[in-house]
Length: 464
Image (tube, rainbow, N blue to C red; front, side):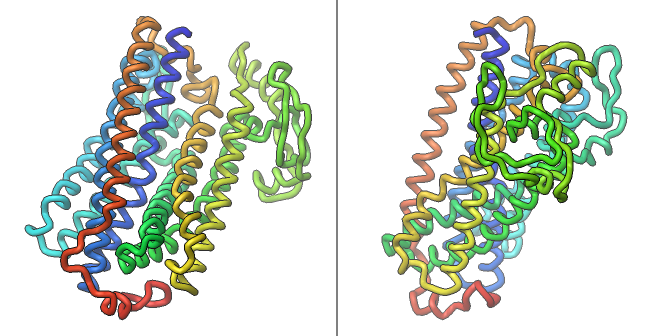
């Protein structure tokens, strides 16, 4: 393998490792802030136990997310120096704002939240967690602004072989950002909701701290249902935008080799990758038109026609992404998304009509369901990035032109091995710590009695 292949593999591994932590950070920060707000408003220490327990798990996840994210920025300057030279004036701006504004906001107030329990008033202490939640999600926004320039370049001019920013507001208002950010944000809430429901289910099965985890399950079921539906709606908007901005990605996601009018949606397609052609497929007529344009009649360009169009526009070359990976990544992501909608609605039904700890089979399912959003998130990111192949900046720079041309493959191989081992150790540490503290449960001091907890009004249909 040459330096290009190794550099791509290294960035893929570090990105997937890092993105394992990000969605949970986005959603769980808000859930912890909400729980502490309920404690401040009601004065009931049940919510204080919940806040401290879920806050501890949030801090573990946050710390490891920071560590895994730092390495990526070094790779831009080392393995991808030609890319950094080409778009550094643009790409660096949102990354700098993210670090100086959002990251310092969330990290500073997280420190205050951790050490300020006995030093701040209850209201001010809860405010610090809301500032952490705001900083965390604003941080994601600036990262996605940077990534959206790679997906859909705007607000630039080419000067002496480099892309230079000419309009900062075009960069911030990039249409890709405002379909990508809501989708990522709602996916974070789904991840956090299933995380809370899964751990709560573990304890409810064992009759541990029933009041804490019954209420945690209720909150997560409500948030998870709303967020799962929003993921589907936002994903629909993102797909419609993708048809216009990156038609090859949509064609690959549907394994649509030839232009269709009206276009059908693939339930399953089996193809010959060597010949790049369809062997067998089951398709639903006109459904792709409905998904892409909200109408039953349309034309969706196929891979072959787009390849010919790109050759005329950009010159000779292979502009077809790895179709099989893109196709199945899309289906795994969407399939798991609809499965999570169903599970979230089921959870909401359980907390509205029954005592959830009396449904052991359901709780066993929700223990395993904690994995679903992580798998969906990973394949969603794979679809986003591999669907853009061969571009590192869509329409402006190909991947092979962005790699460093002075770093030998042997050096990249060494760093790839080292990073993979270190990240693997960090992942093992994270799983160990999360498992350890999740199983330990909340502290028992000042714990409300069962009568006090049962006397509290339900979250469903009542206010605390």
